Every structure is written in structure tokens, then in C-alpha cells.
Length: 195
Image (cartoon, rainbow, N blue to C red; front, side):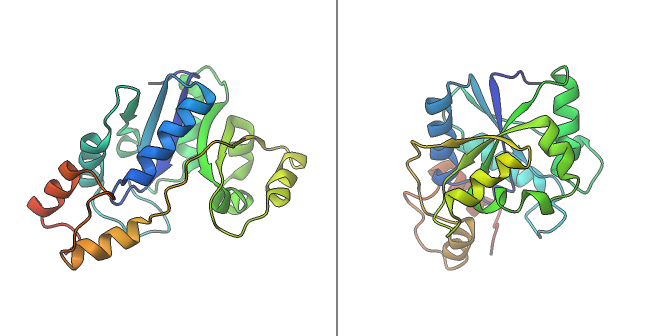
């Protein structure tokens, strides 16, 4: 599977948009990872989402650099897709070394509410993305005192768009230029997704 010079980007990617791609490129540039591997959730426990294989196929179309890859690992693991299960698998595959894992401020501040956070604390190095979410940096830094290993991405060119907004535009048959890749929009239209 991967190696420690790879960084993992978990999410539903429903649909994948330029915000996701730009974040991945910025993280690679700032931290020097060889690859950013997108890990779409197969069966997320708290979200209704589009079929995994459509999201996986759209990611394959959207990733436009050789160092951006998509993994179907979660489709081979027993659902529901809790992050700790995938992390356990990745960590074992990498000899128990800590796995770099991209996460936003808003998700990281709630990390102790995730399923089995002790496993995540032990096996991950978090790459934390600043988002316009009202979360204060000092609250994030307090997680270091509780044993979480993380680095804050300082150089991010934050692209403020949500998948929800994009799905709404598609439903209304509005233009999504500049938000999602043209190949992704063509796939969505051909498969009549989000209608």
C-alpha cells in the first residue's frame, strides 16, 4: 500500500472538488510528501452519501498529478468505515510507523469524540488544515498536551467551497466551472447523479 513519505486524505469526496485538490497540492508542497493518497469512505457511519464507486471514479478523473492517488482500501474493509479501522490496517502495513493524516481544524477539535480516539492518537501524525470555522489556534494547540501528534499547515491557499454547495448547483443544473473538474461534471451528468 503506502509508505511514510505518503500522506492520507480521508473524506467522502461527494463530489471531489478543486478545494480538495488544492489542499492536497498545498500539503505536498509544504511538507514534501511523495504522494497524497485520497481515501474515500466506503460506508461512513454518520453520513448519507453517494455510492462509493461513483465517488471513487470521480476522484480518479479529478486527480491531475502523478503524486495524487486514490485508494479503494475502505471498500475491502468491514463496514461501517470508522477511520480507526483503516488506520489500523495502514499502520500494520507500514510496520507500525505513524501515518500522516490530513484533517481540518473543525474535525480535529472534535477528534476525542471519534470512535477509538486512542488508536488515532497512537498511530497518526495529523496534518491540520486551518479552516474558516471559528476554531481558535490555542484550542488546537491544547491537543498536544493531551498526546496528539500534529503539524499545522501554515501555507494553505484555502479554497472556500463545499460539496453541499456544488451538489445544490448540479441539482439546479447550474454551471460548476471553477469548482469541479470538467471530466467530473461530465461523469455526473452522464450518470444523472445528485438529481
